[in-house]
Image (cartoon, rainbow, N blue to C red):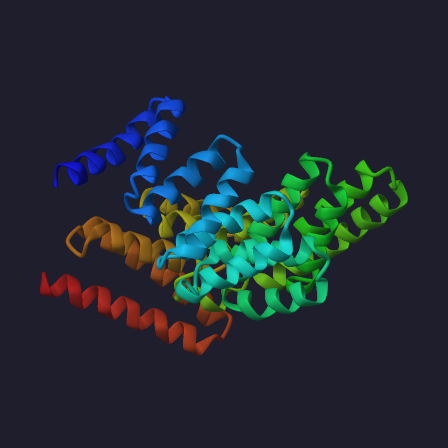
Amino acid sequence: MLDSLKSLLTFKSVDKCISERNYDLAMEKLNELINDGYKPNEVFLKRGQLCHKLLMLEDAYSDFTYIITHCTNKTSAYFERMMINFEISNFYEAILDAEKVLLEYPDNFDIKRIKLLSYIYSDQIDTAREYALNFFENNKYKTIQFLLNETAKNVAEDSLAKGLKILDIVEEIDHENPIKILKEANIYGLAGDTQKENDLMNRLVSVFPKYFISHFKFSDIYEERDLLETCFLLELRVFDKQNIFAYPMSILEGYKYNSEGHIIDSKECFERAIEINPNKPEAYVLLAQTLQLMSGYNNPELKQEAEENYRKALKIYEEQKLVLRADDMKRQIKHLNSTINLI
């Protein structure tokens, strides 16, 4: 009993040693616990993680493999070994370990991320393409975001060929993505291929406007936008050199602030959109909805301002002969007034 309590206290003290960067003492305690046979699964895992932290990769690999071979709870060890395999470019082994972890955590995005990159870096491009298209079907913008981030890391490390491999997968997911084209042009520029760089930059000029228009639609202004998509589209602002899309960019920024709970910032964005183009109805509707939210249905001034904006949108929709939209504004105004009367 006393020995077990002593081992428990020793094991708990290891984290304190690591936090204080007393790694030698932490390793000494873990070795002692292993010799005593105390909870091999937990102790070997902790020692393997410490070895990994200290870049003692062979020792870490050995500890995780021991758990996989001898212990019942293997998932954490598979995960840790997967990370080491990925770091040392054992991509085939990383894929196998990832598959083991995914049996228990089938929806874990980070593990699937490692698996996809392992397919790419091991030149299993067809498999990578299929995996990306199938799995990331419902995570498009999150997928593109991490792939572009990985591209940037590779370029920073002068791994230009790896960067181009990743961009090939982005091409499959989102064919004319302007950020992808820009990064590709930068890579060819770094590689000294100015002709290819110029060709891509010329393509970028023609691609951006139609790409943005195809992705941004006002038809869903009453639906909650996906925050990742909104942030992604806002990144395209850098390509709008002539500020042609100032109005929809302000709308998007308002969506972003609204999704993040920054209601006052959201209100200011929609007001700015109205200043940019007072002849479009969407910003009036969104501003009215925001004012309604801010009022909490008990602030007469904000509700009156909300009604004024609904009426401005109603007038524009009627002039455009958009009957369904106009009827919707009438319903919004009726609902707003009925709420006022109840209060």
